[in-house]
Amino acid sequence: CDEVWFLLEALLAGVVPVLLPPNLPPAKLASLKHAYGRFAERTDQQIICPADAVTADPRLFAVLLTSGSTGAPKLVGASESALRIGVTTIHQVQALEPVAAAAVLLPLHFGFALINQLLWAIHYEREVILTSGMGLPAQALKELRDAGAAMVCMVSQQIRTLFSLGLAAAAPLSNLQVVNLAGG
Image 1 (cartoon, helix red, strand yellow):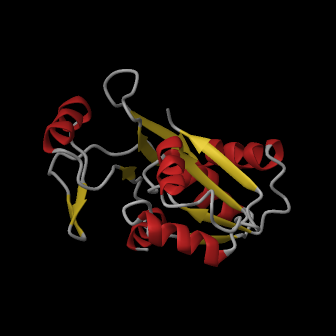
Image 2 (cartoon, rainbow, N blue to C red):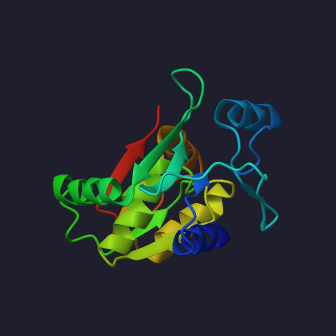
């Protein structure tokens, strides 16, 4: 998945990525630029960096965009140590030791997919199954079934979509041990 490679390349290069959804409406992007200003952005695999770009706090590992469900979206920065503590806590609280693989249905700009799945899997050296996502729900369901993942993170709308495709009538996802629900 290109999204994962771009994220890892940025991190290895010492760049603090700001994870924004693709196809962010121009008005929302303009609002973020006005509120936070002077950050570089990647478009079509090219990074556009303004001459007066802000220098990120070296303690930051990644910056996520909130959904804005309680008002205007906000950028939230996290350090590597804070993310490590979060991943470790998730692992312990959810008793994820037996989970060998996580399937990613949510886009990685969703903090839940990034932290609870990708970073968790990297930290604990588990398999990550990158699905085609819910843009192609029938294909994502097939990938989820074929991959045999033990954990998946979803939002309630995705569950409704999968049930509308016959999930309830289909053979159970026998390897699935943990379903995390994110979002509102």
